[in-house]
Amino acid sequence: MALISQRISSMPPSETLAMTQIANELAEAGKDVIKLSIGEPDFNTPEVVKEAAKTAIDENWTHYPPVPGYPELKKAICAKFKRDNNLDYTPDQIIVSTGAKQSIYQVVMALVDPGDEVVIPAPYWVSYKAVVQLAEGKSVYIQTTIENDFKVTPDQLRAALTPKTKMMIFSSPSNPTGMLYSREELKALAEVLRDYPNVIVLADEIYEHINFEGKHESMAQFDWMKERTVTVNGVAKGFAMTGWRIGFIGAPVAIAKACNKLQGQVTSATCSIAQRATIKAMQMDPAISDDIINMRNIFLKRRDLVYDLLCQIPGFKVRLPKGAFYFFPDISELYGKQVPADSVFAKTYNKTTIENSTDFCMYILYDANVALVMGAAFGDDRCVRLSYATSEEKLREAMRRIREAVVKMK
Image 1 (cartoon, one colour):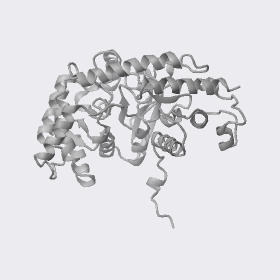
Image 2 (spheres, rainbow, N blue to C red):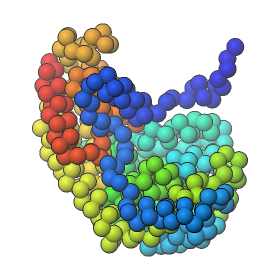
Image 3 (cartoon, rainbow, N blue to C red):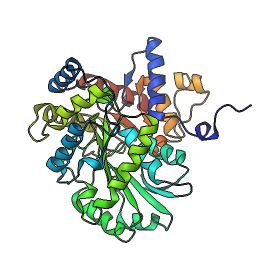
Image 4 (cartoon, helix red, strand yellow):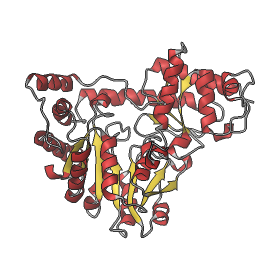
């Protein structure tokens, strides 16, 4: 008797979490594993935010909040959108959820019917395709290349759009590539979408504050896209608040109401204490906040370090990312090469040929004890993703181990 629904049985697990789990198991077995697989800042939450949470506990903010979020928080989010993005939202357009992932899930479930097409530029964040699958939609991928900084061109977007297209999902700055779109590039895509008034854009801006090029640009800034764009953001990445689980959307009222309806049946409101703390986070101006500026500067220094070291590894094709904290090098030149027959990877999987990004990641994990994520998880099997959200010491050692393992390949 089949106990598990087909919906869940056919859904792939999160490959990023799966690689982290294997790395944890090796670490528990005594291996010195350097984990470059997880997308989490290695900083602590700002003190002012933690103090706000302590105050909220002392003031007994411990009862059920309103489903879409506290009014004070929604007003603070509106002010943040205006300050940082020059976007005008009203509180009834804001829904606060348990992380940006839930926000994305709810938007897709609220809009996509079975058979609807959702355009997703590849590489993409792993959960986009899974959420579309759960909604019984059809993902339509636009393949980009490292030579074009993994960016979609207007011609590619136009070619992917059909009368069945309901939505486009993209992130900027990007997970997994670290690329970001300029205002001119976004406007060119928006001009294409002008001819498709029924297409909604889900713009994932969770890495907004980790931007090494200056001002962040939002799709919703264009007049003809404002009522057709759902802007997703949160506090996990830019404020080092991954465990607080706060995400939010700015959306047309009808979409916000639909997400509120769904959230009321699934989770209700998210954590009251985390919400009260997030009010303080929203009041932190990224242009003058030492916490945000220092974190961004440290990430920038690490990016430049890792870029230099990656460029020294044979077979790696590397682009300099402009945001987030990832590299997504093309390592396909190494496919078809052999690893030592006595390697841990060869003994574990009974194979010595590196045929794809999964083989390469497993070889590096077992023989170099460095955890990466296979590019296949993000829709590009030519590449691998590595996070540089860890110390310079660990990054130097990880790059040394990877290079040493690659040099052994024949």
